[in-house]
Amino acid sequence: MQGRKEIAQSVGLSTADWFEQLAIELKLSQSALRARMKDYRASNRVLEDVRAQYPTERGIELFGKTFPQIHTIDFILSFITSTFNEREINELTFFKFGKRVIDQSRRRHVLSVTKSLDAENLRRGEYWKARQEHIRNVLCGTYILFRPSLTVSGDKSFRKVYTEVMHIKPNTHFPQVLEAYWRRWTQQRRIFYTGNFFISSNFLYGTFVNRSSDEVLKPVNINILSKHAQRSSLRRFILTGSLTGTDFTQEKIIHYPIALKRTLPEHIPDHDRFLGIEKINDENFCEFADLLLDHPKTPFDTFEMLSFIKEHHVEFGALSLNNLK
Image (cartoon, rainbow, N blue to C red):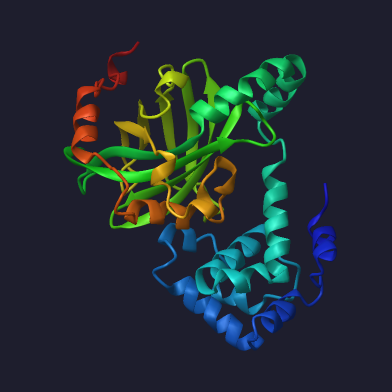
């Protein structure tokens, strides 16, 4: 596994003058680049919780004095992806460097569950190899996700549903794991959540987080019943499940039902770019999801889904811990 400086050398990023190199490639003076970074940090494009994890104005002034740490890399990647166009970004040496660092950190075995899955590959490799066709053709794909709207206080409201997009694809390292991207609503805007589903008997279950923060903010757990996702119903089927998250203040845990409806190939916009499981990734998903949500021919069936969610909604009260001995 390469260190940050080795990765920098491999992509051509100067380890001594990396900030100056970034400014030159962006055709800005270093002082102008620092000023724009400060403006971005102070803007409403950065959530208050996330802002606390980013470098201070003094920290931005010191960019270039030392080699960037992970939180600096995250801040700069967020800044350039929010400020410059895709063509400019892809040509930046720092972007190539940052992407390699982030991708490498994702592959480290820091959790017992991933170590166990890796060991399972040795024991049950043939089983998961045989399961891949079913996983790709039945479980993976693009879904319209429906969930109840929330009141300001965080309570469920069945008057209408949020209509969102979730894309599920295989994980390249673990056949038992699926990668998933989720374009969701929070208050009045769309945000990007990313996470993983673990494949269990009859269920998919996973955790999702907003990717733009060093700290895990407002994690969401999702369970999906996949037992009835059979090959005979590929053209049109609905999955049901549940979602557990927090209200806007993160002071209350909320549990509520969801429904997912598979999107048919003919409803995928811009076929040449987006048709196919592997064509969707964390870099182009937001554009794809927004095109799908704004596409006039996407069948949302909101009333049908609202009825489906209400019909399958069973709520259990919390345990009263005071009565336990």
